Image 1 (cartoon, rainbow, N blue to C red):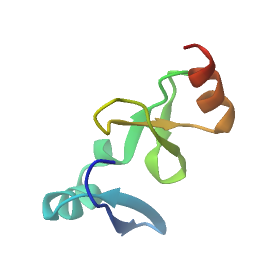
Image 2 (cartoon, rainbow, N blue to C red):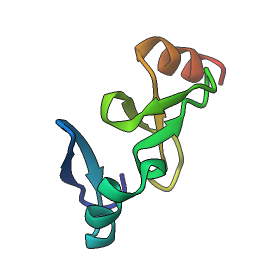
Image 3 (cartoon, one colour):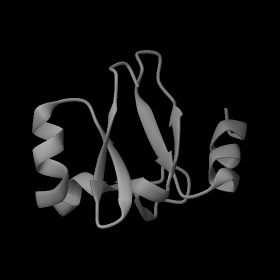
Image 4 (cartoon, helix red, strand yellow):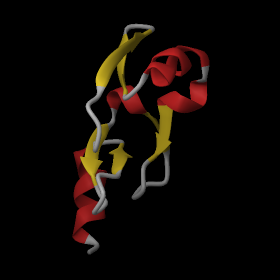
Length: 76
Protein backbone atom coordinates (compact mmCIF):
# COMPACT_ATOMS: atom_id res chain seq x y z
CA UNK A 1 0.00 0.00 0.00
CA UNK A 2 2.98 2.29 -0.16
CA UNK A 3 3.07 2.74 3.63
CA UNK A 4 3.18 0.29 6.47
CA UNK A 5 -0.39 -0.43 7.58
CA UNK A 6 -1.76 -1.31 11.00
CA UNK A 7 -5.02 -2.91 12.03
CA UNK A 8 -7.88 -0.85 13.40
CA UNK A 9 -10.59 -2.98 15.02
CA UNK A 10 -14.10 -1.58 14.79
CA UNK A 11 -17.35 -3.41 15.51
CA UNK A 12 -15.66 -6.81 15.18
CA UNK A 13 -14.10 -6.01 11.80
CA UNK A 14 -10.52 -5.18 10.87
CA UNK A 15 -9.74 -2.08 8.82
CA UNK A 16 -6.28 -0.85 7.90
CA UNK A 17 -4.79 2.54 8.60
CA UNK A 18 -1.44 4.20 8.00
CA UNK A 19 -1.27 6.86 10.72
CA UNK A 20 -2.67 8.04 14.04
CA UNK A 21 -5.28 10.10 12.19
CA UNK A 22 -6.59 6.92 10.52
CA UNK A 23 -6.72 5.18 13.87
CA UNK A 24 -8.94 7.95 15.21
CA UNK A 25 -11.01 8.53 12.07
CA UNK A 26 -11.95 4.96 11.12
CA UNK A 27 -14.26 4.44 14.14
CA UNK A 28 -15.78 7.93 13.86
CA UNK A 29 -16.23 8.46 10.11
CA UNK A 30 -18.27 5.83 8.21
CA UNK A 31 -16.94 7.09 4.87
CA UNK A 32 -13.46 5.82 5.77
CA UNK A 33 -14.79 2.26 6.02
CA UNK A 34 -16.27 2.00 2.53
CA UNK A 35 -14.99 2.09 -1.05
CA UNK A 36 -16.40 1.75 -4.54
CA UNK A 37 -15.43 -1.42 -6.42
CA UNK A 38 -13.88 -0.08 -9.67
CA UNK A 39 -15.44 -2.88 -11.71
CA UNK A 40 -18.93 -3.41 -10.27
CA UNK A 41 -19.25 0.22 -9.10
CA UNK A 42 -20.89 -1.04 -5.89
CA UNK A 43 -20.15 0.44 -2.50
CA UNK A 44 -18.36 -2.14 -0.37
CA UNK A 45 -17.06 -2.50 3.17
CA UNK A 46 -13.26 -2.23 3.18
CA UNK A 47 -13.04 -4.84 5.96
CA UNK A 48 -14.46 -7.54 3.67
CA UNK A 49 -12.93 -6.35 0.40
CA UNK A 50 -10.19 -7.83 -1.73
CA UNK A 51 -7.42 -5.20 -1.64
CA UNK A 52 -5.09 -4.98 -4.63
CA UNK A 53 -2.43 -2.59 -5.85
CA UNK A 54 -3.79 -1.12 -9.06
CA UNK A 55 -1.52 1.85 -9.70
CA UNK A 56 2.11 2.42 -10.50
CA UNK A 57 2.71 4.37 -7.29
CA UNK A 58 1.25 2.01 -4.70
CA UNK A 59 -2.38 3.03 -5.17
CA UNK A 60 -4.86 0.40 -4.06
CA UNK A 61 -8.38 -0.52 -5.06
CA UNK A 62 -11.00 -2.43 -3.11
CA UNK A 63 -13.01 -5.19 -4.82
CA UNK A 64 -16.16 -6.87 -3.57
CA UNK A 65 -14.81 -10.33 -4.48
CA UNK A 66 -12.27 -12.23 -6.58
CA UNK A 67 -14.58 -12.19 -9.61
CA UNK A 68 -14.77 -8.40 -9.83
CA UNK A 69 -11.00 -8.19 -9.29
CA UNK A 70 -10.37 -10.70 -12.10
CA UNK A 71 -12.81 -8.94 -14.41
CA UNK A 72 -11.14 -5.61 -13.69
CA UNK A 73 -7.66 -6.97 -14.48
CA UNK A 74 -8.87 -8.74 -17.64
CA UNK A 75 -10.13 -5.50 -19.18
CA UNK A 76 -6.55 -4.26 -19.67
